[in-house]
Image (cartoon, rainbow, N blue to C red; front, side):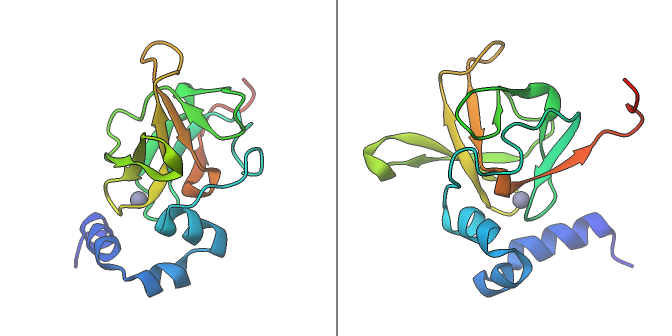
Length: 145
Ligand SMILES: [Zn+2]
């Protein structure tokens, strides 16, 4: 029997564009697979304060922890740093007449958002992420706090 982790990683790496289109809803597909951006304040996580971990909407890899989330006022979920074990890749993006650092999930190559240098301490970085690229898994055992 193949272990779940290995099987998942292999599958996601090999998915074709059509397979992604079938697996994802239209909005997630447009953003994650075609490099789109959701309208500010339209996503489901920009104002979320629930404790938990944020995973890739395409492959479920851990990306961010809610403890690094901050209110940037931009209308997109914003983090000052990724989760310690997150697998991320960055790429220069010169679209929209700006030089920006594009952030992708290194596991499945999904487009997540961009990194800007105007974030809060301790990193000074702002990871500006589309809600559609994330899925929040609430922390367990913290009820009643
Ligand atoms: Zn991924």
